Length: 92
Image 1 (tube, rainbow, N blue to C red):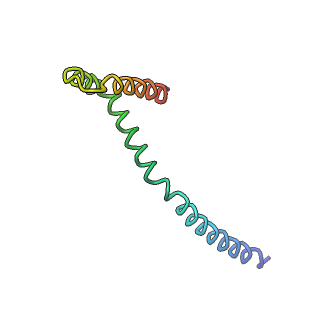
Image 2: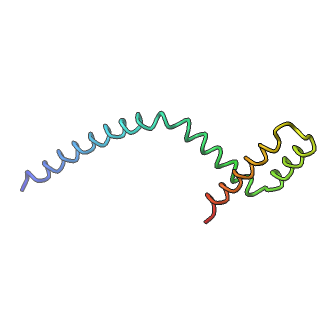
Image 3: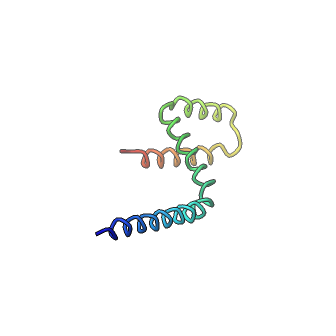
């Protein structure tokens, strides 16, 4: 009966070492994704801000229309597609 606690302690020690090694491997595998995930997080934050403050989007649109910049139509189309995608993604 005295062997069981010792075996459990040994197994626990082995499992903790295994977990530590797996954490290191996971951190190494996730590192290349850190920059793209950060960029995506900033994009989501921007979309949430625009969702809460739609007047900003209207203001930018009016400013572009007033300035009549080249390729405004292309950017407006892209913005509209982005807006629609954002609405679908965050629709819950």
